[in-house]
Length: 267
Image (cartoon, rainbow, N blue to C red; front, side):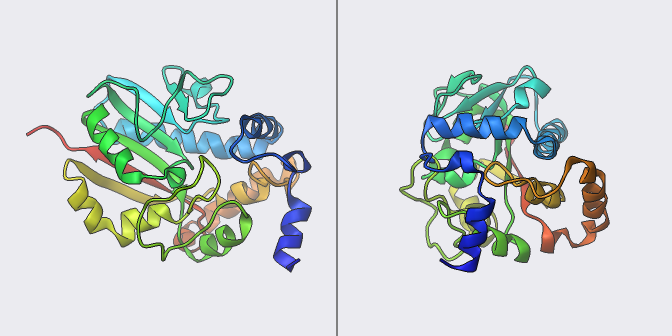
């Protein structure tokens, strides 16, 4: 066993041992872990605030707002009008929804929100086709996804055994299950490496913004949903201050980025 594998095994939350990553059981275990971690709760609340701020700033609102890949999310408690969905049924969800074949009417959604779910989609282009179909003109989608900076590359290549971080994968598709085998570099491949191809394939969509986020220390030190917390709760203010202080080098140290896509207004 390598040193990295040994450390990962030591830090892994014991409640996840033997749990199938594509099972409904994983959602329930993750929900319990999230409820026990104030620091991780703050990370998610930050994500929710970013999603809502970007939608208000960039989208034509007034129709439905839908969270995809909601899983253990408590976004709806922050934004009650939200429709929460996931490809797997779970307690608290409003609807089971496949993001690549959405049971939603045409031109019915003002905003989609997806947190750490896009890189699990086996056919991203079909997702973009569905955005084009279901979004109102001027509506859009906010995604929060793994960043591809130096620190992110180092962490993501070693953090999970069930996911990869492969920037050399030639196409965007995969044959993975909902969780197993995802490529965390997918957003890099689509929205940076192959951006011109994405524009050609999606002429009615536009990439409005890609920005690196700065809550990476909170995310990492909280242990996320899979690992033990590395700091006591009383150190949270210090962690936040350190993130703020290091903001100028977010592109190097950041773990997540926000991506804003909008359906072009009707001419």
